[in-house]
Image (tube, rainbow, N blue to C red; front, side, top):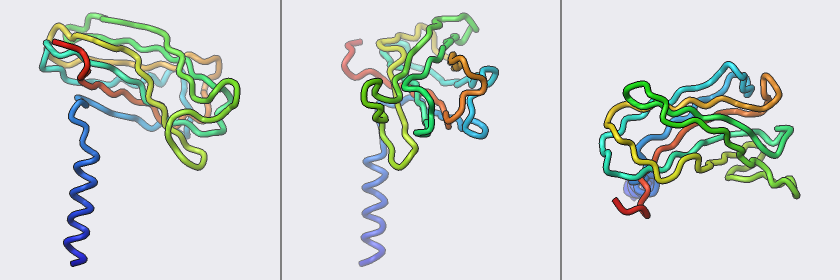
Length: 160
């Protein structure tokens, strides 16, 4: 009976953990929970279906000791032929500016925020795309940012 319960719980966790819309998701831990300006992680993801519409998200894990309510960062997206497709500055809210309450999900003093960076994107060529993230705050290094990442997902509400 005990083995059957363990197998059932494991199967349930696997099913609930599946995300059929996710094409790619990767996060990188930052050394000593400090994001240096010259540490600009590059995330490489493969696109096969050029008819699909995608959304691109930025993931941030932070510690409640973070000194600001927001985080400015810049993305640069390049295509399979190394052509720059987009570059933009983003402001991510990590805490409510009025109440100081942490945003995202978490517990204790560690929270995760996922913010939509690019929506309804059509990748015109199949192949490997690269998305680079650079912090654009006035501190170097920027303390209490623990990890950053990228998620690419099919947009189920957009019509092909």
